[in-house]
Image (cartoon, rainbow, N blue to C red):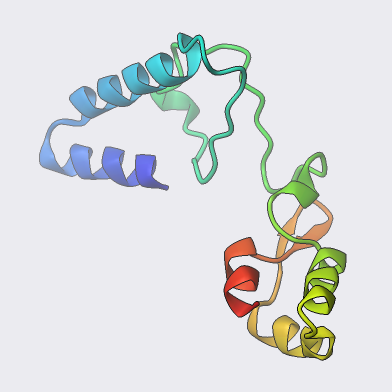
Length: 121
């Protein structure tokens, strides 16, 4: 989302090409030519294929929120939340958690936001 905001802001302020070049260079330096990095995960990015900000990178794998693979890796599953609540002696609070911290759907999996659950605990 931040990249979208930066590009949109740059577009309206007249320095879009410079910002796109900067982001492209940043991704290439941080992700492609970094000898200390085996793999990385970029989240919250819109896939903007026509902008080619990923031009210096190859072999990217894109997993959207509709993809089932890794769907349970983006937060806590309901079973994990129940386990955490039990560990903290709060097993009776599951309905309250469902009410206040509804779930997100990734693929076919419903996931709780980890930050919200940890703050609740």
